[in-house]
Image (cartoon, rainbow, N blue to C red; front, side):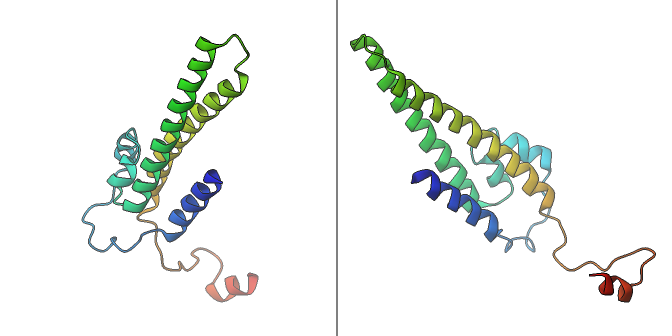
Length: 140
């Protein structure tokens, strides 16, 4: 259920786009610097001035790290106290370790792509080349 809520939040944050600050921005973000800032969870989004996305990515990373830590301690306690198989604890620990890595990389990639697309034109572009605009509309 929590994964579904995080997925919905990620998709809605991407759909919202947060385009209100484009006019006041003096420089377009450098994608490489956004990638480097993304080494800190939510840092790339902060660099791109996407405050809600930064909160989401940092929060998701903190959640998965805390769950990984909880399951790591649970697995360690199970191994130390009983001779019984602790495969369930091991699987949960490994699952959350994967989620930590996935969200970490996803945050960096999202910051890099967002920095590239922040200057993407929002208006409709007329076709250029051999086809006149009237014929282009007929082809659609």
